[in-house]
Structures are given as structure tokens and as C-alpha cells.
Length: 299
Image (tube, rainbow, N blue to C red; front, side, top):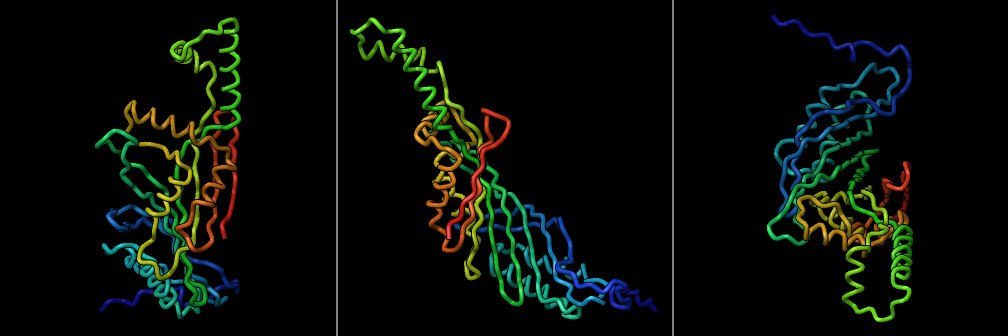
């Protein structure tokens, strides 16, 4: 005869009578399937899952119940607002004996997307986009937020203006007494001297958080990333040849931006989201050891 195993979470009472806002697990490994349009890929996610514990005398929740319910996000079906809502509702229902009313899930993973080179045909490479999903069920109300991080290049407008001035001064000094310059001579001078001064550029990152509709068919991550990259206009590249590097230099020259410019571009460019959007941009400066940052919100 098999002995009944003790369950002290049910048979013992808590000595300190206090309700707890959240109890659960953090950093659970889980495969998730992201499917949006032509994109379909299984990714490794780290998941946090918790419920509230309002009954002060209850010693503990049922961790294994939460753990097993997460399989509802990892059974080979695409991750959607709908199945996140179903799992959250099941988490609450599984803890009726603890009087739980609220549940939340946080997922972190990197979305891998293949990106083409700017100009070279049939050249492409993989780019990783960190994603965070935060889903919650509070008193039966479901909410879902998605946050993505996108890397881009930023060239300082002030530094560009200062560089142009130095090149202008050098040209005037070199040709002070020459009033018969031809376009070809000017072009030759620029070929050898246009880099007497260069503006500073830096790798930068944009973090954008949006609220997703519970009725959405998918998470809309690819569309969000595309909108961000289109707004900043200078996303970092993957595979490049010289022609692609030249095209990237042209993009930077045509899109000089302070951190304020980048934040405003993103706020104005996030037309794909009907809800509130939060923007945080960070320019990892090459001029000095601290970074330039800006925050913004679109209601």
C-alpha cells in the first residue's frame, strides 16, 4: 500500500498572518512558438509565473500546478494573446483553495529574424531582438504588454556641423588665392581631405512598449519591430559588403539625430498601435563615457 505523502502547505498554518501580493516562480525554461505571417520559429523563453495569496493563514501555494499549466504555452501552438489569457485564467482557477484572484506571467526571449543587406542581392544575416511579454489577470481583467529592443545607429547633428565647418575652413585655406577651380579639382580635393573631421556616431537602442488587444490573432512583434526600424531609418545591419556599408553611411548622413530626435521619430512612427506606447531611447555615446537617453509616450 502506497503511503500518502504529506502536504504541509495544506495541513500547516502560517505562523505570520500576512497576505502576499505575488507568489510563484521565476526563470522557468520554456520553448515558445512565434508565428506571424511568414515568420514561424520556436524560441527559448524564460518565464516567470505567479499568483496572489490573499489568505493570511495559508502557508503556501501549489508551485507544481503553475509549472504544469505553463505547458499550455509550449505545446507546439503559436503564442497568442488568447492562450496567454487561457493560462492565466487556469492559474487562478487552480488556486481557488488559496482564494487567489490574480495571476501574472512574464516571458523573455530573443526574436531571431533574417534581414537582407541594404543593396547587395541575395545577401542576408540574422538579427536578434530582445522581447518581453507581461500578461496579467486581475479580478478577471486581462492585460498584455509587449516590449521590444531594437538597435540602430545615431550620428550627432552637432558633431556633423562642426566637422563640416572644419572641412570648409581647410578648403578655403588651401585655395585662398585660386579663383579658377574646376569641379574636378574640387572633387579631387574632397577625395583626399573630406575626412579631415568626421562626426561621431554610436550604436544606439530603442525600447518600445505597447499594450496589445486581447482579441489580437498574434502578438504583432514583427510589425512593431519593422515600424521601429522604419522610424529611426538607420537600423544596425547584419551581413554587409562595401556597397552595403556605403549605403549605411548614406543613411546615417541623411538621418542625423539627437536622442530627442530619435524619441520623437518613434512616437510619431508607431501608428500600428491603437493603445498607449512608451518609448525609451539610449545613445551609447562615443564622445564621452556616459550615455544620452530620452523617454516619451504616445497616448
